[in-house]
Length: 306
Figure (tube, rainbow, N blue to C red):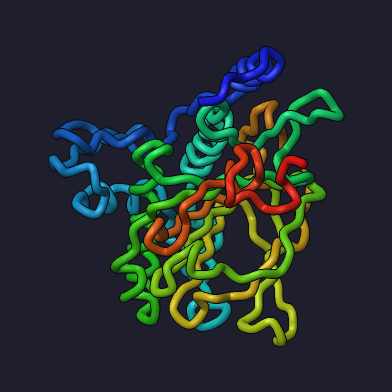
């Protein structure tokens, strides 16, 4: 691994100290290797012994469905594109936010997370201007991260017949964490096959400030948008697998009062995305390589060292 400069090390220590600790009611890490207690919402729920693959642990996914998700109805905005308003309980939102911050802070030395050292500014900066991007294999996340991805896919398949088959085979192999400041944006694009299998849905949870999410079935179609609040979940698959989409605007100071953002990164919007994709699809690199935090042949030209 890469040795961290002393300034970076000190910043990581201060930032880690600012991370909020899970409050009562937070979804705890799953005990899935052996029989034991799993505690969504701190409610003690005994689960059956199961393997490390969350697909072999249906009881655990059922617990998450009942304890971490609300009974809200999903809305199909386009065939295959679904919006669940306020699907995640506040406790689940806090757990996901804590996970996102912890994973992207613990990264330096192995994966550098949301931050890069600014040579000109002499301080840590977000790795992509007014936003930060991070993605890596699901095994760098706590185990309940993948379990929740499975639970969301199961809910999707139960509620929408057109997505039942894609959702049934969904396995969250990669986790993506994006952080947006008030000025953060993401331009119009669609997710190619090397960022998600063509026959699997993409599932995303929204945390923090509200945002306007732009979408359309084809690039030539008129722009549409939906406002996503903290706790909302969207998914697109089937006919909408290649949905053209964008993050158009973040609405500052709209975060739920009881959702605690730590000092680093501070308030903003976080998107948490589960993707079924791997090296067999062409995704052979993580965000470190792509954004030039680690220089490889996969680094985008604008981030290559001159």
